[in-house]
Image (tube, rainbow, N blue to C red; front, side, top):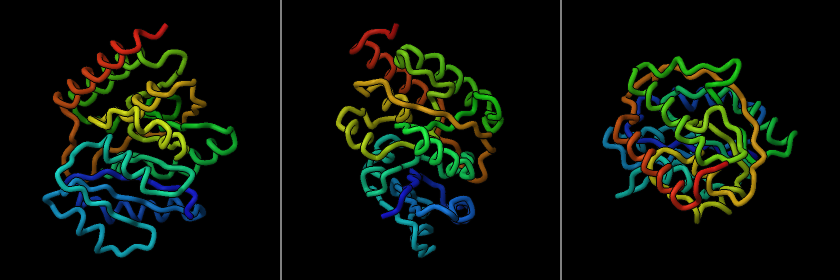
Length: 236
């Protein structure tokens, strides 16, 4: 059983697959790890590229008729027996070299969750190359604060985090599994304050393909926040 499973939701990321796997090999050399690509039937042949690698640590879950990062992430998490699971984008923007530090922090401090943050000392969001993506990210951070209560996160919109698999299993029935807000959904759905740490990283420019983040995604996120707020009331 691997110690760490890295879950990588994909849609039209064929050209990023091989460079990403090489980067994970370099970064995780001293860790017993696996990676699960969860592909939403990409028309560019992403799943075929993954299978062609025939890498002993890599698996691909091919989903038919289903789309969405949050549900893909949960399916990937639950498909592994590893005690620790991490979520990363497959576009090479997240810094895979920070994964060992995230795992070490979680284990040494007995944490439930470690978040890769762009907005702490040593981090950077420079990889958000468009004004639209920058605005949506910043607006999402502000909107998220109403749901976090006493939990303090500098980057609640982060799609780069590591968690105990048992936490995901416990919270999975409460998660909406829609849209792109899986981290905030985890924090907002917990029935106790989570033990959370942060590790700064520098967001890199996308290497290939196109970003899925746009105004539709932003609108879905704000609708999610409003629904959660309505059910539980504003945090004080």
